[in-house]
Image (cartoon, rainbow, N blue to C red; front, side):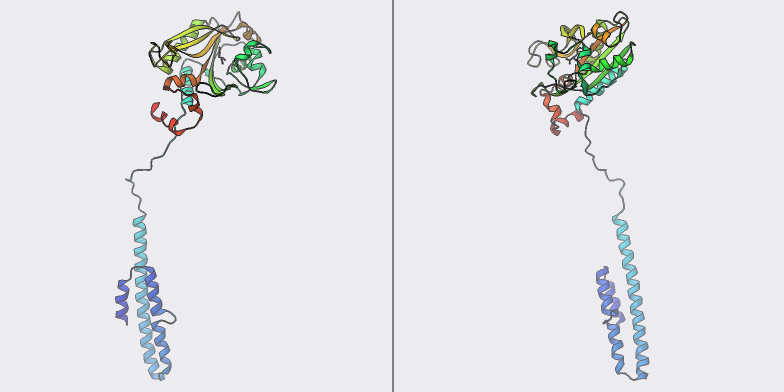
Length: 337
Ligand code: PHE
């Protein structure tokens, strides 16, 4: 019996088979107990001898099972350790990182550039008062130039800012007549029907520099540096007379068309130039309304269209791409940077 058990145990290599065999030998109705049951028909002399024998067999069985159980457990632990070993030389998982949105990238580029020129970054609320967005910018109620910007009004005094220029007002009121050198990138809103070149929500980057003897030449210099840094070292700029109620004189600023290099193409409507921003010398009425003495301090302001220059930089033809969250569009800028 013992030899037979030894053979059977040798063939076993898992816990389930082991348990099954253990029941056959040592279970309640197992082989050992069956032999015990046979004892009842024997004489007491025979019982003693037979009982001792069966007991011996039982002990031998138990010893064999316990040794085998230890062996099986050891194998299991060995296997577990082997399976769970970490291979530190295996290549890691590739994370699918996002990328900076092209509009944010332009803002980062503008901020880095202007901070390098000594500007600081100003902020203002997107829900603005009529007073700061228009009145203090020399646009009283009923002024015809208000039609230049079709505005989302919340109530007669509150609106979604249609330009970042109210941040000029806020900064001047806070600085109380002292020199200023700021830019303010941010969201703006107008009641435009969305199409390839218009979006009801868009972004501007306002600039304001006030100090003694600041001239239009300083404005031109700052904008030329900006165009060359953001759009390319060969950029030229051109200033055209224009009108904004809060600047006098006012200019519209074009950059040379990078697609055709100024020869004329569909992108620049055959003019060789593309308009990117409005600017001018801060109107003396605005300076006065915001607590500055125009005889002491003057300066310039500009408002860059962030989408506009981003479209130019990357050759994007539809402004709606910026706001549609299409990954096929956004993924391109991983390498484009
Ligand atoms: N705020 C003007 C616009 O949105 C742009 C501008 C800013 C013009 C500053 C002059 C000075 O059209």
